[in-house]
Amino acid sequence: MKVLVTGVAGQLGRELMLKLQSANVAVIGIGRGELDFANPEQVAAGIAEQQADWVVNCGAYTRVDRAEEEPELAFQVNRDSAKAVAEGVKRYGGRLLQVSTDFIFDGNQSHPYQEGDGANPLGVYGQSKWEGEQGVREVLPEAIILRTAWVYGEHGNNFVKTMLRLAAERDELTVVDDQVGTPAWTADIADAILVLIKGDHPGTWHFTNEGVASWYDFAQEIVIMARRLGYPIRVKRVRPIPSADFPTPAARPAYSVLSKQKIRAILGYDIPHWRQSLTAMLKASSR
Image (cartoon, rainbow, N blue to C red; front, side, top):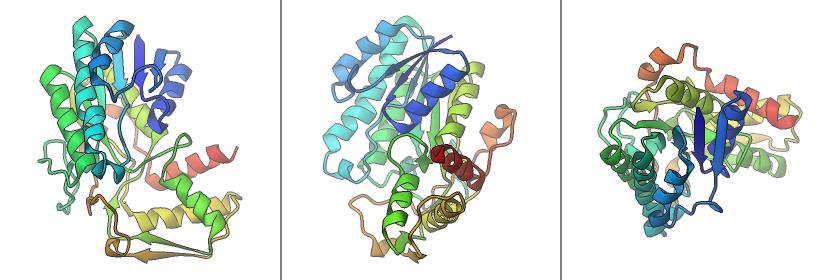
């Protein structure tokens, strides 16, 4: 099996590349330098040229707030190029897994979102990813769509790394406590992707770690675990604040917990709790 991974400069793409290599899977990585998703007209040909058995599209425009200022670019990358990837895969009869996001939901629900729940994005980023999903399904109805949320890992920029940096610089951190979801470690997402492509499970799936947290809960645990593991932590207090006290250009879902009932049935192992995976990530990063 040969796998092509797009977006290898990003945190999930990089992690997946390493995971596939360690599993002795033939893998090709493509980043912006090889294939610019801001030019969708070039993408289909570039994907088709590789003739990979599987393409895992981790390439995305993920700057949620800046997307409100750059909607054209966000839609080029997340909608038009996602569809172009599917068109490239279709040309030679390959298979595709498209990575998507909890931001397709509005967060008005109070119980975990299932795969068939209606989408209602709150901003440009979520809308562009939702339309990207639709474009992929239109071209390849048998594609795999994997939605995840609150992604962090050893590679790239993410909330955990930001909290570690700020906790080493400041005496107090303020973090919103009225947005609720579940963190997802890239290593665990990569494991789930391997199961999905090796078993060829078409359709839409949700994956994060287990458990529920607010961003405040997540930040508190990062500080506690990092201090315990010997990170240089200066901060003395993590203070919860409402989202209204931390306005952002893009609205975020207040509740974006994704149901994992469907994917649990095929994984063959227990999904780790987010605290367990956070500890594992911090230990790995400290080496």
